[in-house]
Image (cartoon, rainbow, N blue to C red; front, side, top):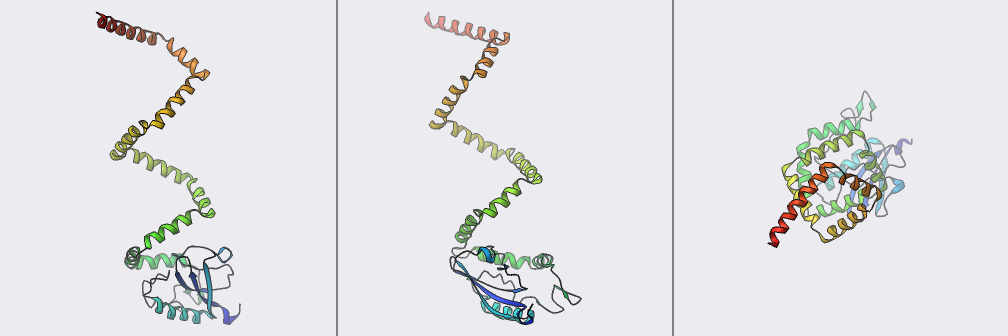
Length: 252
């Protein structure tokens, strides 16, 4: 790698949402796009048409990180950037105080550091997201983004594979079993079932289905066998006697 081009600082423009994202990248991954947890995820090879990137500068690790910190200081109070700046200046990003600097070498334990950093600044993150959610148009923008995100083929495939996991299926069954036992859910389902069965289209559909169902040969055989049972014949005889007595009483 060219020593003068170890890293670069970039700026993304989201023309659809009129937002920006400033970042830096260390390395030569040609497919790298950004590392934002807020802006939609994509790579250089599948960049949306409304996203445009501009490389602001190339340089060494230290030079590009210093440049990024200076630029972040200029946008710390702006709402049109995806950057989450919970403190400024940010924690040390290079040298012996860096979280990725161990014994003179760089490590890739970014996930562990992010978890540690989040746990130490949890209240700042909560305040930031609470304030961000109250901005005008933020809820509508988030809904639109999530709607579009869920329709992506790769997301659909991931969700489908996730739901097929045995542990997820078991958890879902337990949740549904517990949910159906809640008094408010039982009452709601009763009310809905009562209203649903009274709909004209449901009544019509049920009648047509029952008419077609009774004409099936196996159903006819079952009903015929059922009527031949002694206890069924006895019950029908008692019912007929009651009906006949009532009819005679009404004729007197």
